[in-house]
Every structure is written in structure tokens, then in C-alpha cells.
Length: 131
Image 1 (cartoon, rainbow, N blue to C red):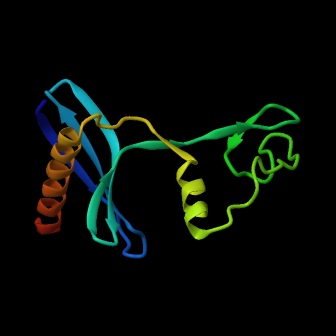
Image 2 (cartoon, rainbow, N blue to C red):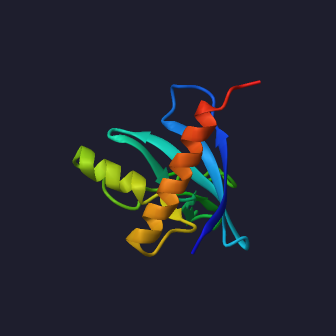
């Protein structure tokens, strides 16, 4: 596998941990969009594209984002599926389960290649003079 192109789309504003979005092309034939460059506690890392999970409204069956309090279609109250998390760690795990990766590397080596290429391109984009 060879990453043949990396495009970086910096995000403005320093208040967010999201620094940029990236698009990679693999072997000049496959594109992965919306890879995120995030500032973590121990430095920059790459997060794969994901989408928010949905739950059905018990009244009208409309798909709403997980943990929604009310249905976007009929306005009915949506009961919580499970008890409130007891610890901050459980709260973090519950929030993480709201998202599902759309594309992700299977091997550690593949993840390392993607992360290295994306972060190299991000640093090069940051160093490039603005017009």
C-alpha cells in the first residue's frame, strides 16, 4: 500500500482540539476523506472518519442521534436506553460509543503509515507561508 496524495484542510480557531481535516489517496485509486488531525494530551494524532450512531424513536420510528432527549420528527420524549454512567470513565466510554468508524486501518503498520504521512503533510502545511 502506498499513500500517493495527502491534502490538508486546516481548521481556524485555537479553541477546538480539531486542527485539520485530511484527505488521502491510496495507490492513486482509493480516496479516504474526513480524516481528522486532533491535538491530544500527548501531541497530535489522527482519527479516522466516523459518523454518529442513530436510535429509533419508540413512537414514530424516526432515526435520531444516540442520546437524543426528544425525537426530531414527532417531538416525543426518548427514554434513556441505559442508566446514567457512574464514573467519568464510563461517561467517556458512553460518548465514544456514539460514533462508529466509517473506514479504519486493520493493522498497526497501516495506521502508522497513515498517521505519519498525514502528520508530515499537516506540519508542511503549517510551515507554508499564508497569502
